[in-house]
Length: 301
Ligand code: NAD
Ligand code: MG
Image 1: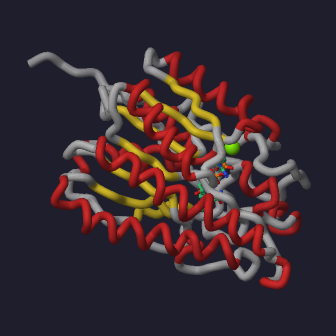
Image 2: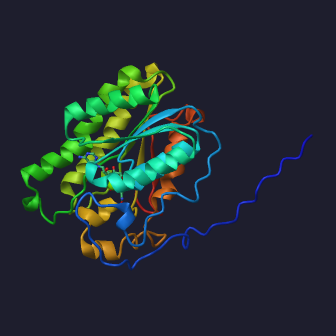
Image 3: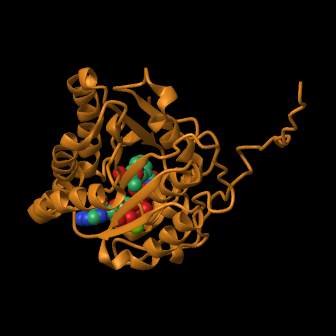
C-alpha cells in the first residue's frame, strides 16, 4: 500500500491566535471597509486550505465583500465552487479584493453590487447569478444592517424600516427568486446571531431580525425538506468586522470588543469559514433546520 504523507497540524491556542482588546478607537461611515480596519480582520486570505469539498458548486453570497461573507467566499472558491458576491457600491474596494482571490483559485468570481432593500434588485441579483454561474445551488443570505441605538426612542421609522428591509425582506425576496432554480442537494444558509437568543439592549431592531432569521431557517427547512433543499443558520458571537466599526457598536463597546467572552477576544471571520463550508457540503446531508454557533464560549446555541 502506498504511504500517504500528511502534513502535521500544529496545535493552535485559541486564546492567543488572534488580537484581543483593548482595540484602538475607530469609526467609519456605514457600511465600512475591512481594508480600513485596525487591526485588519482575518478572512482566511492566507490560511484557508481547500480539499475539493464544494467542487463544481455554484454559490451566491450577500455581503460577500467583507466579514463572514468574505470568509465564506474565499473558502468556497478554495473548495472548488464558483462564487457570486453582492455588496453595496461603496464597498467596491473590498469586493475587488475578494473577486481577485476567487479568480486566483481558477473559479468564476462574479461581482454584483446593489441595494438589497430593493425587491426588484433582489430578483435581478438572483437571475444574474444563475445566468452567469450557469446555475445556483448554494444561497448564503448573510448581509445585514446593525446600528446601535441606546433607546427605542432613538430608532426612527426609517431606521427600523431599513433594518427590516435588509435583514428580513431581502432573504425573503432572494429565496423566493432562487427556489425555482434550486435542485435537490442545494442549500440555503442564513447568518443569524447570538443576538437571536440574548439581545443587547441597544440593538432592539437588529436583534429581532436575527431571531427572525433563526426562525425562517427552521420553517423553511421543514417546508423544503421534501424538495431535498437544506436550510441552516450560522450564529456568530462578537466578530471583528466592518459592521461593528460603522455604527454597529458604541465606541466604548468597540474598545473592549469580545473581551467579555470566555476566550477573552472577538472572533475573526476566518474562524467561521469552515462552518459555512460544512453546512453547504454534500456530506452534511442530515443537517437541516440547524443553527451552528461560534461565539468564543458564550452565546447560544
Ligand atoms: P460586514 O459589514 O462585513 O458584512 C455585512 C454586509 O452586509 C456588508 O458587507 C454589506 O455588503 C451588506 N449590506 C448591508 N446592507 C446592505 C444593503 N442594503 N444592500 C446590500 N448589501 C448590504 O459585517 P459582518 O459582521 O460580517 O456581517 C455579516 C453577518 O454576520 C450579518 O448577518 C450580521 O448580522 C452577522 N453577525 C455579525 C456579528 C459580528 O459581531 N460581526 C455577530 C453576529 C452576527
Ligand atoms: Mg462590507
